[in-house]
Image (cartoon, rainbow, N blue to C red; front, side, top):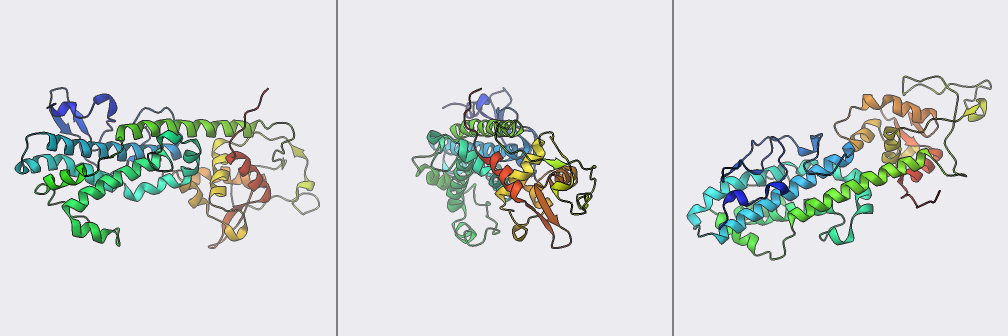
Length: 354
């Protein structure tokens, strides 16, 4: 039987500081890293090799990698226990290594919503051969981890597990994991077609990289439109520091585009394009469907401060791509021109020859 150090290959296991991962110090004995409750979705670096990702793709990628990795480790502990000469009395020794993995996976459940804003992008680039029964690899990672935990919980705390289906806030009692570890391993062993967690992680890396690349291509195409494409133009306006400021009016006092001389503009920034894409995804396409700037920024990246987007919202408003109302019930939405432009951003690029 292989030693514990060989249970998780070093090259296959991400090792983020402060999270619960089985690690090897080279001495032949496994040990656990310090367990913190900070979500992996707040990290500013990837947990597996993938290249540079924008924040809204990095958070769900780390969530998926973390979930699939820890779930795979739980399965490997169970297989190691069943494949050894260990008895039921040895269960508590294994359980102390498995329980933190279970709790870490569950601690990320409140952050699963980071996947929603980019799900369409990931599905669009997902590989048909790497879906693992889901709609994309990232979703498959979360499904895989939840499936593993359901098997564990149903064996450790069957009553609590049944009740949590009607009340997600219901805590699971893991105190019996040690005494019931043999039952847990048998329950996991009843599933003969477990997905490969490492394969899911690799698929997530390819998927995230492809989504980032396609987004960059869309932004490049939007900044260099082909002949005949209408580019949003604006009148020559002074800078607006306050997003809530009214648009300046021209000589005839209407504030219409005809009041000013059109000038070619610099392309929108990546941040401004993301705002438009997010508003379209939120269906903020009319005043009656308005959304808030805070909601838009949170969908882009929950760690970002809406104040840092103030000038970007102001620029989109000046270009007539968005409109807004003030007050407690106010909000912002895409204009017809903004809708058209946002759709250009979210439409996959077609191959064009120079």
